[in-house]
Image (cartoon, rainbow, N blue to C red; front, side, top):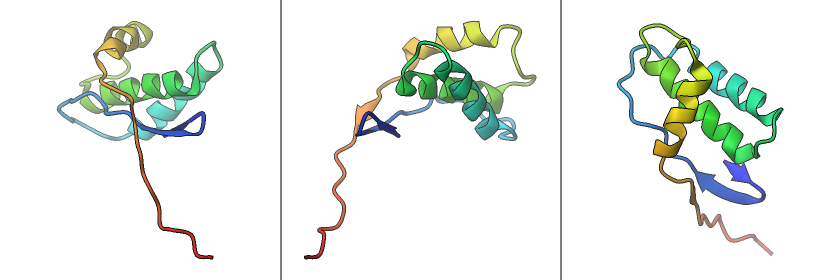
Length: 92
């Protein structure tokens, strides 16, 4: 993802998938809701990634307190790590 002009990679938590239905919607909704508060784009995206991970592995979703579960999992994420990607050399 791009954060302030820097390309970074955020590894998601390792989970055992049960059903991926709605994972992308969950990521987008939680990231959007977090961005309405006082969080950076990167932190909002990290919250969305954690929520999507819960959605993928949960027998029932959402848990009783999704916000608390996100807060519990955030410190366990590794990264984000900057990516030094170089594209093709521009033609002159």
